Length: 432
Image (tube, rainbow, N blue to C red; front, top):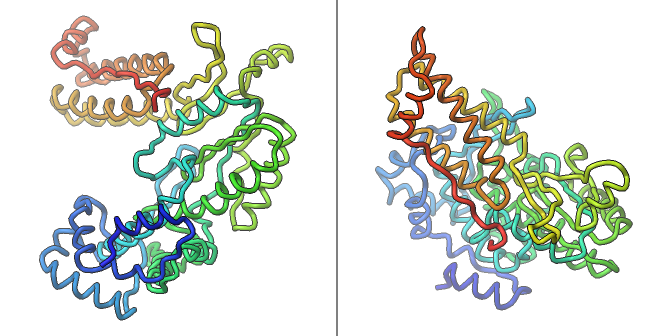
């Protein structure tokens, strides 16, 4: 019987191969594997079924689910919609699916990844094995520093996940998978509907954020809509260098010549519109960026422009030997947001009289996560500023535990000797 490993091998060996009978890999065994891998702490859907409850009659539940899939009686339940606040006052919709639907999505994700992962270009960096934000930044660095990059187009797609067109999505999947059973499961998942309060809203477009399948579906969509088109249609027509890095719906395009960058930007708008998408104009712009940007900016009487990608502000600079370098620092937006969150959290924990050791243990876990992401080449100044602000914040709230000051700076530093805050260790983005 064919398995996922063999499917991936076949897809890698023959990029034009179309799979016609691979629904058989979704069986009781695969669903049980998906169940084992499922996080037990995730929020529950509209049926309130948890992993532990589903597990009580696992064999029976899996057999029943598999029978409904085989007989085409399976229907995905509507997802519970939760709106997460964003920095700009808007909200990000998050869909919470029922446990059984998560199992089907997890199995479907494995099948789609086995077929499509081998055909994705290296520039597709989001939600893929052995790739990360840091690797995307490293690739972007090499594109700018090692090639004739003079202009950068920093782009964002407006509401990307909410505007994926179901018809196009199924056509893209059908280009490699013509098994109607797989296509039906994808369609059932996409059109499950959204439950907001007591109202059921149909989903005519979009792939809900929160769906286990959303990342691979997003990559498939971006592959055909943008990356394949750029690599196979745009680049061969250009007289100069061009490169692209994509992470989910966020992408940066490098160009040697301004006229070609501007022409691409216009064509990009039309291309995205054809597939139901729009550029977020307020977050997208074409700037001069590269080894000559600083010199040209000084001649015009202003500083060289910067752009933000994956939480870092990228700017033109020089290495110690005087050679051109792209450097980066934590974006001010992300910097301020994290400090604001920490200020609230520390305040709450101090007011609830958390023991100092527990407070520092919690804070160190937060700092480890922050440093693990932001502690990369050239970002030491922003990391130092962040650590300084956190120390002052901690001192402030510890001194408000009572009406009179709890400690002075000497006593505070002695406390940090006993309960030290973690420090960062820089990762070399050039080696990624």
